[in-house]
Image 1 (cartoon, rainbow, N blue to C red):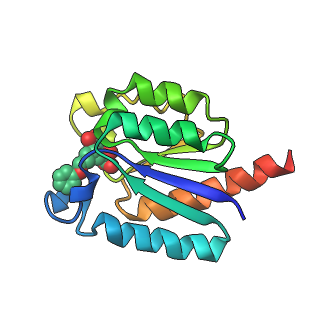
Image 2 (cartoon, rainbow, N blue to C red; image 1 turned 120 degrees about the vertical axis):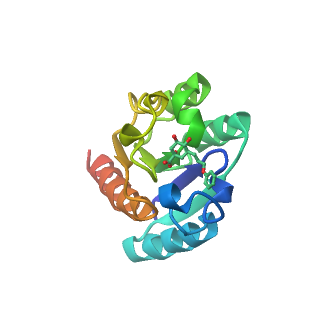
Length: 149
Ligand code: CA2
C-alpha cells in the first residue's frame, strides 16, 4: 500500500480557532480525519504531521527518502522563506504536491513567491480544507504513474 506523508507547517495547529474567513472553520484534526477516510477509500496509508519548527520539518523530509511514496506539504509561512525545506525536498525522490488553504496569489505580494513550487509536481491552493482531498487524489495518481515506469 503506498505511503503518503502530509506535512503541515507553522501555526496550522491554530486552524479553526482564528481567521476563519481566510482559513475556514475546520481544525487540523478535522482535516486529518478526512484525509484518513479518503486514504482508506483510495488505498493509501496516511502519515499526517504538523510542526512549528523548520528543522523538524527538514528532518521529517530527510527521513521520508526511501520510506515514503509521496509527500503533500503545506509549508505555511516557510513556503515564502525556507531554502532549507526546498533543499530537503529536492533530494527526496518521490512525487511532491505543494498545498495551501488560501489562494496565495490573491493575498499580499510577499505570499506570491514560493520556494517549494519550483520542485513540486503540482500546486493546489485556494480550495480550503477540500484542497487536502484534491491533493490526495492527485498524489495517488502520480504515485501509481511512477510505479508503472
Ligand atoms: O493558505 C495557506 O495554507 C498558507 O500556507 C497558510 C499560512 C500562510 O503563511 C501561507 O502564506 C498560506 C499561514 C498558516 C497560519 O494558519 C493560521 C490558522 C489560523 C489562525 C492563524 C493562523
